[in-house]
Amino acid sequence: MESIFELKAIQMFIDTCHQSWLKGWNERNGGNMSYRMTEEEAASVRPFLNEKTQPRPIGLRVENLANEYFIVTGSGKFYKNILREPENNICVIRVDETGENYRIVWGLAEGGVPTSELPTHLLNHSIKKERTNGQYRVIMHAHPANTVALTFLLPLEDKAFTRNIWEMITECPIVFPAGIGVLPWMVCGSSDIAYATGEKIKKYDAVIWSHHGIFCAGPDFDTTFGLMDTIEKSAEILIKVMSCGGKKQFITPEQILALSEPYHVDIDAQMLS
Ligand code: 2HA
Ligand code: ZN
Image 1: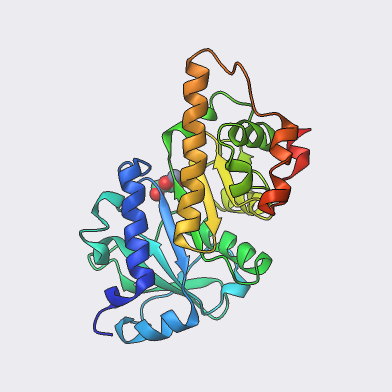
Image 2: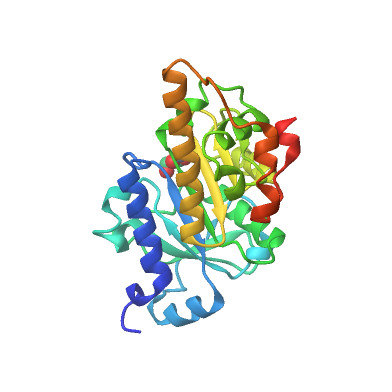
């Protein structure tokens, strides 16, 4: 390998950020993304890494992520610029052997630090790694407009969001059969929002931060981006329906639950009770 950009995961990371920008989900420095690298990926790029940089505290402890490498967006960096200048806008970090500190080992060439939401990303990676046997690797946070708009209109409850968003596109309950979590407004970048999101992410793959944005987790870039895209599309339909005077008919709970068997998913019936 002659350049770190030959690594598919780096290419996918950059491309996914750019797709998110094109969707309009990342105004200015809005949003952040992280990817937990495989051992093989980390080994293949080791010649390009500087492991001797200064350690910095994460702000919480993520023991099961000790010595893991992550690709992460930079704090205050604009998604608009990632495709053109990836080395100045994203970085690779390594969590140390205690799970309490990290080092920037590549990237942010003109200076900077990882996303302000790093504690939330790492805590939620830690939880998803444990719960999915290491399968989940991607976390995306962004500010899609229709999803945020709904947090001014619907009750800020998991059930209300799940049911309303499921109802807008038949595929929704198949794509996220566990539903969606909702948090009240909170200070972003804090360990409080990290822990609150962590509680919700135990059950869901998507958590809405009221009056702010959405936080999604998944096994790979396409699935995680696809989840955010599906939720935002549904939210857009709901906003259009509400703007046109509201629902005149809807998919019934029985119809939603009828999708479980043919699509081999476990749609949570409690969301519809
Ligand atoms: O990166 O989106 O939540 C800026 C943010 C913080
Ligand atoms: Zn945000």
